[in-house]
Image (tube, rainbow, N blue to C red):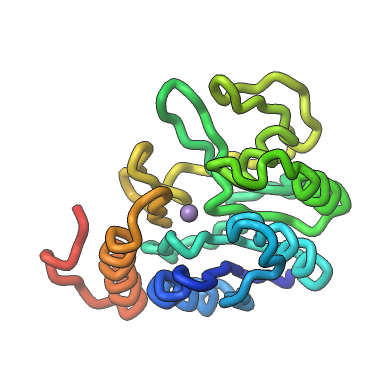
Length: 224
Ligand SMILES: [Mn+2]
């Protein structure tokens, strides 16, 4: 199976990706992924977050499995391959975060299998220009395509064949501040300042590097 781990960090996100990307390299090497890390937007007419969609459409012509990790996220525990969390029937995988009485699938970590239905939903997501500048960007469009409404709160309102084929992953694969995992595999910092992200990702990258080398990490370098 041809697998690729991808991310985009353009402009001010380049510096963030420099840090998180170290952890992507460790993971890719360990689990036999190609690494496709972009420094430029594919469609600069759209907000950065949307650019993962054309990247997926391109990569899915060459790879059987695409794993996306946001530039503002670090793989802190590379022990397991996220691909192993999918059953044969699963076409995509996401973490759904629980907060404010809602359960919200999040595109910060997104696994996609090569399949016509996956290509179709990506193409439909791309057409939702009403969410171009929504605070959740393409994540809002994906939710709608998966049968959710997003206003006034996120909830399922329609049946969706694709939703039935989405594997909702353990929260450790996309641990965020409002819904933190006890033992994160990926730490993600949505909506945080550049300074906060750089600071936390730097600590994460250090601990990921140490985990690779099998050495112990000094207590003060760890985030509790
Ligand atoms: Mn993010």
